[in-house]
Image (cartoon, rainbow, N blue to C red; front, side, top):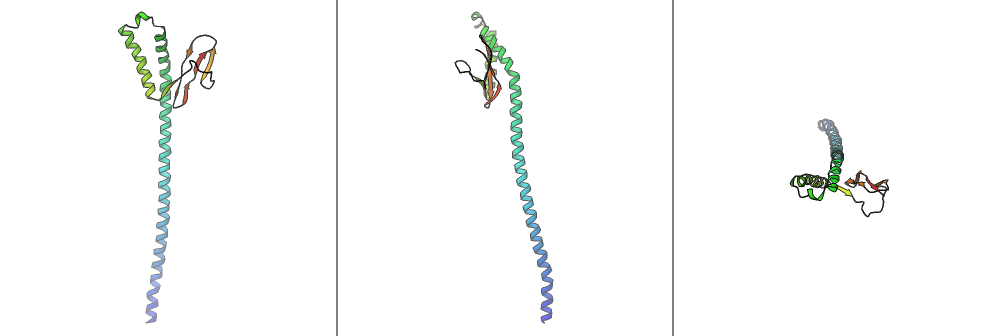
Length: 151
């Protein structure tokens, strides 16, 4: 009978070894899958950040194209004779300027204040020693267009 018992034990060893090997493979596959999932989540997060940056740059490009239009409205508003300010057509045109300003504000654009401010070369550019200026703007604390002032 002892021989029969030893024969029974022998077939169990290969099964146990095979089971152990399967467990090792399972652990390796699980660890690999977990690493890949973490890598994918990191990639997804980085892509979302890149997309956000691209949208910011797209927005900045659009804003830069709007600024000369706003400059022209500012010039028209400053040079408009008083007797025309009450004209409904003129009021409508100046309302467009206000709408552009509100749109830019909603996009995070703010005017760089220069009146009464000390000259700051990181925000301002001195262009002459006479009257006149070009407004500067920034978006999300990044300079879009430096203010050009006349000292």
